[in-house]
Amino acid sequence: MANIIEMPKLSDTMTVGTLVKWLKKEGDVVKTGDMLAEVETDKATMELECFFDGTLLKIFANAGAQVAIGSALCAIGKPGEKVEAPAPKTPPSAAPAAPQPAGTATAPMQRPEQTAASAAGASTTAKNEAEARPTASAPTPSATREAAAAKGTSQRVRISPLARKLAEEKGIDPARVTGSGPGGRIVRADILAAEKSGGASAKAAASGTFAGEAPLRGGPVQEERVVAVSNMRGAIARRLVESKTQLPHFYVEIEIDAAPLLAIREQLNAGLEAEGVKLSVNDFILKASAEALRRVPQVNASWEGTQIHYFPAAHVSFAVAMEDGLITPVIRDAHMKSVFQISTEAKSLGKLARDKKLKPEQFTGGTFCVSNLGMMGIPRFSAIINPPNAAILAVGTTIKKPVVRNDEIVVGQTMTLTLSCDHRVVDGAVGAQYLNALKTLLESPALLLV
Image (spheres, rainbow, N blue to C red):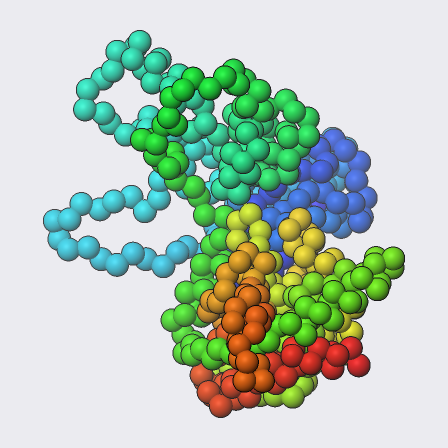
């Protein structure tokens, strides 16, 4: 009897998984430990492992399909063995919509292009919204052809926002790029590959001669489109709504003198360059955050309804931006690691996160989180707490400005840190104590090296 491999639950919040691509095809001989496919969860893209020896008899879900947990993905058995697709399982439905007043027309809950493909593998094809919308008068065939030529084919190209922006910056025509993402979607890696090959440049097709006309500014900022919410974006939305509606946030802010931190970082990087050491400001922030938790451990906690859980270890997570959202890899036992160890681990986890290759144990179990937008030039911001953490630290950029030092006005380098706290766990005085401990450590960064 054939063995059925079902969609596993690969994260704590996962309800469906998107089958990115198959690594094996029907008829291939497989064995235990082989990787059969790549599956995108709400947190990362992971490989699906085979647990049987035999032949891949049947694939039930096509690439690009969203499959509910427990639904059949494929069958493995003896060559020639007959197998039929089990009935697909339905993922948990969304909460019912609020009732509408009598006499009000009911709009459809989802457009066809937003509906996930069934577990049997029928991937959906989004229609051009402009084609579906009725027009006031039917255009002539010649007018239609002219309009289509003017618009080009970019509206029919499935491309991520980041890839689209990158294509515009590099002069790449997305219509000439083959997508490798789910359902043929163009992602950042495809644009970079196209740039390297030089075969999809939109600039190459231009004459290169300035006609003396001002650039056109009357068009839309982008084409109108409807994009189905990805697993990751949906999970982020649910968790952030939960955090802002259920966690009583309050915010504490402090400004630190960043000059000592920048100086010691420069000295270490220059002195250890031959050994391949390149520390970032964020490496010091992560280390200092963990050490500050040692000094003010009340922040290293979470609310559990009828009790507050205080954690003995500082598992510090940090936000990593991705194409379709963000994820928070965790540096475990950060209070026990040197800034050099944290730097190495953060770089490795960051790369895995951007490649969507993190394992569940690498992005769960954090007790405190750091979100740094300083490298993007943001002077200060307030972050939303990442449940079940009781706090999150928002890090701004370093700013040169006049400061008073020894009763004299001099040029200083300052950094603003904002702590968002869950008031059920952390009171204002505790939040202030934590930021002051963090300030002491960052303004005397040699303390982080011992």
